[in-house]
Image (cartoon, rainbow, N blue to C red; front, side, top):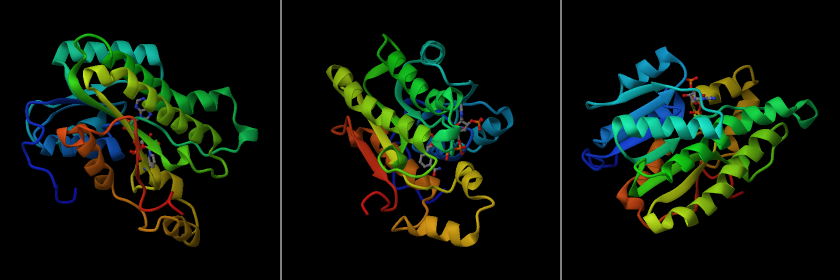
Length: 256
Ligand SMILES: NC(=O)c1ccc[n+]([C@@H]2O[C@H](COP(=O)([O-])OP(=O)(O)OC[C@H]3O[C@@H](n4cnc5c(N)ncnc54)[C@H](OP(=O)(O)O)[C@@H]3O)[C@@H](O)[C@H]2O)c1
């Protein structure tokens, strides 16, 4: 992780649920929250990866939860149970999600379920839980991962793009619903960030193709800490007047 720009006690006494905490962006955000003194309740599917991530989070009291996320109702029940067991949440960062590169002629209901399940349906379940008594404190913050693909097209990305656009649309209405409790809801639309997901997408591609992909971002590929800095900002009191928005953290991809 690169040098933190935040004070190491900025989130002390606060508790955050982080999905996708076993890898990539979720893991980096969990680490940054912990480095700022926050308690992390980190969720993933793979036990070894999640335990390895858990051991890299500084400080005490962090929790690793194995949970498949893909259904709004099940996610809401699980989130409620997590808050009942560990205490009300100050924030939720939702990074669980999967890549899907497939042309529409080969995309069936199963692929749409896959793209929407972890990214959108789980986000909706997290939000529903947060609306219920005792799950999230007033003044809390929800941050959902989205992608530049939510607003920019590319061959083979229809299901993936639609699921991220759905997240961005939901964020605007959720911000309106949660405002009476001063709970803020935002998304981050990331460009290509070097994570295990990014490695799976680029592996096997010719070097000139990868170079062109990097060049489509004015500042090249990003690092997980680039997303973690934005996420911690939105989760923290520093973001107190930001809600209902999608923050582009994309190295200058979408502006072109
Ligand atoms: N990296 C990028 O360039 C980029 C760009 C834009 C948007 N995003 C979005 O950011 C999110 C995180 O991406 P990443 O690069 O960090 O990917 P990653 O390294 O592959 O990590 C994905 C995480 O999501 C978890 N996960 C996946 N499907 C799940 C499911 N059905 N239930 C519960 N957990 C699930 C994985 O758990 P296990 O490992 O334990 O299975 C893992 O912790 C994704 O939504 C992705 O679309 C990424």
